[in-house]
Image 1 (tube, rainbow over the protein chains, first blue to last red):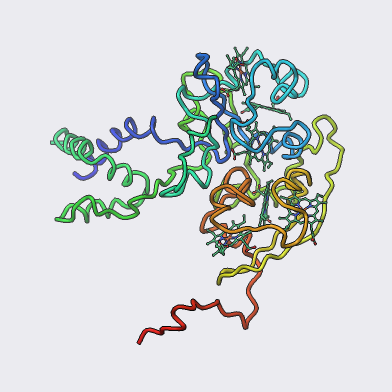
Image 2 (cartoon, rainbow over the protein chains, first blue to last red):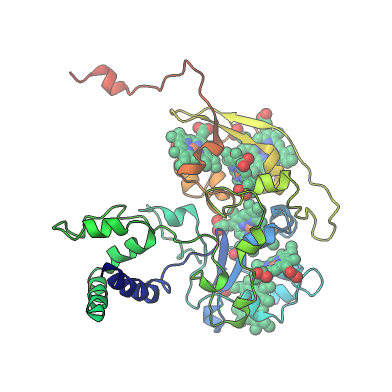
Length: 135
Length: 220
């Protein structure tokens, strides 16, 4: 008796909750300085996937990625010039830039952020909400 | 009959979406749902403000950030497959990245091209005494230099000199000092991770400093 009500409840919930709640992998970076405006899906950069293959030093010291989501102002022009993602996604170290959807895989409208961060999990942040940090 | 109950569920839900979401978020509390059907207002729930994640390491198509309508989303690797066999932790990626390196289960490159270049590792622990009952902080250079370069921290985040830097928890939680990485990419700040940094027990005779105002005017 309780069960069937619950099944109804849960199936409704599946529909209602899933699109809103994000449970992406810790440290996934969403980059959306320009993507939405250009009609592309935002870029999702998976830290977990890259750190299995490279130490932080490779990107954050050698390639000069600053420690700030959205802070590097990455553009396609820089990428095909061999900077940022383009230092590896060039068909040599990894697959090449024509695979647009591999990077541009985010849900449209998702703001720039680093997902699952401690600041995002605070009950009452006393500062600007994450997501407004695109400058 | 069953349909009616289904309806009840749906109605209850549309009236109380917030409560329902929390019920669904934590798996076992079916019992608490039952208990709440008395006269207790549904505003008075447990763990009112915590948005608890339901599942760990979800595949990209289900994680709420990747667009399932994008064909390439389904080609991306689900984290669980990649993490198979790695040592675990109860937070962050749920992977113990330091142990994974130490046991050679992972060998990420230190150079973009050359897989044989060894990292420049420095084994120097810095102890920071904490003005609190929590254990003192030990900053170990070793795991950091396994992953990072000196220039990632020195001199922009930390002046390379013992005690030359002001650090505290509010700054860290706001993403400064250790919080530049911890809480973003390196393991997060959460109840289960405090003792990773706060790892040196206080001396046996250590007592917390007492508030002056209460010493001056003791309560009866």
